[in-house]
Structure formats: structure tokens, C-alpha cells
Image 1: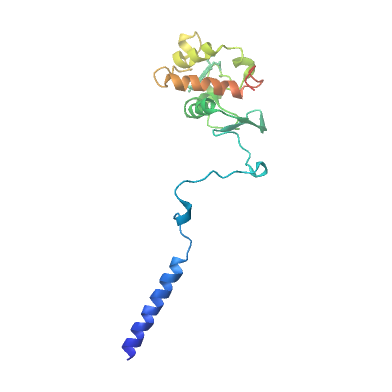
Image 2 (image 1 turned 135 degrees about the horizontal axis):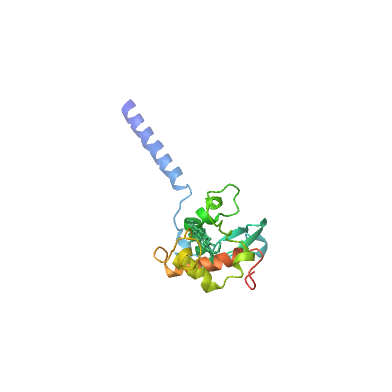
Amino acid sequence: MIYISVLIGSIAISTAVKKSRASEACWCWSQGQGMVATPYIHPPSKEYLSYGSYGAEADWSNADHILPLNYEQEQGKRIFYKQCVWCHADSTPSGPSNRSNLTPIPHLMNDGVALNKMKDQEIIRIIAEGGRRMGRSAMMPPYGQTLSVDDMYNLLPYIRVIATPAYPGVR
Ligand code: HEC
């Protein structure tokens, strides 16, 4: 008798547990919903501040000013922080750069006074062929073998968009 009542009791408990499980939130499609996600229309007031699908960069000379970056500029930024920041530095105080030990000290990449004067092709050439081939310091390495042509052409719009004073026609 005791055995049977324990058995019935435990069956009752396990069905109760199953039922409560079934009513838990489920990350599955409910039947009415189908598999196609319908676009959710955001009222403009609820839109997040968006700088497009790619990145943004705080203006090196004014951190409150955010520069939206397009795809190429964002790729350029990525390569800059991988390859170039070690010598050219950015605006981070005491950042990872060895810039002050180089001769001559290279310009900051946002130095519009120096870089806006350089033509696109000159900048691409110094990146590809390095300083020595351009009659400049051999401390600027050639990247023609390391970077793809796309990488080099993506660095250029990044350099142009961060320039201070602004590069004419870019921002
Ligand atoms: C090992 C250190 C070093 C690295 C890494 C380096 N540069 Fe340079 N770069 C220099 C030096 C030094 C100069 C100055 C050359 C001169 O004027 O004689 C220079 C000059 C330049 C210039 C000409 C403008 C100027 O400052 O005089 C450009 C543009 C440039 N570098 C771009 C880049 C880019 C883009 C990268 C990354 C792909 C890069 N550099 C990586 C050391 C470096």
C-alpha cells in the first residue's frame, strides 16, 4: 500500500514538473510565426545614434567630435592600428609608440598640415616603397610586400578622414 502511494505520488510530481517546464519561455518559433522575420520598424525617436554600419573614430584633436568611418576608412584604421601606430602614434597619451625615438620623428597620421600637401600617389608610394626609395628616412619601412594593394588604398582614406586641419572635400 505504501509502495503504491509513493509510486502514484512520484508520478504526480513528475507530471507537474513537466507541465511547468512546458510553460517556460521557449526560444523556438511559435506556430503562428512562420520562419520569416518581419522587419521591425523603429520610430525615429527610438533609433540609436548610428554612424552607419561601420565604425567611428574620435577626432584625434577633439575627442568630443566623432568622425563616422565608411568601410574603406574602417579597414584603413584596422591596418593603421596593426602596422603603423607603433611608429606614427595616435592621440593616446603615452600610447604604445616608439615615435619619439625615430629620426626624423614621423608626422602624426592626422597631421593635416604635413599630409594634406602630399598627393594620394605620394602617400601610396611611401607606404609601398618605404622611406629610402623616396629619398627619405629608411626608418619608414616598405609595405609593398606585406600589405595588399587594397590595404594600402584603404589606409589613404583613413589618413584623409582623420586629418586636422581637414583634408579638403573629405569632411
Ligand atoms: C618602423 C617605424 C615606422 C612604421 C612601422 C611606419 N612608419 Fe611611416 N614613417 C616612419 C618614419 C621615420 C617616417 C619619416 C620619414 C621621413 O620623413 O624621412 C615615416 C613617414 C611616413 C609618411 C610620410 C609623412 C611623414 O610623416 O613624413 C607616411 C604617409 C607614412 N609614414 C605612412 C605609414 C603607414 C601608413 C604605415 C603603416 C602601414 C607606416 N607609415 C608605418 C616610420 C614608420
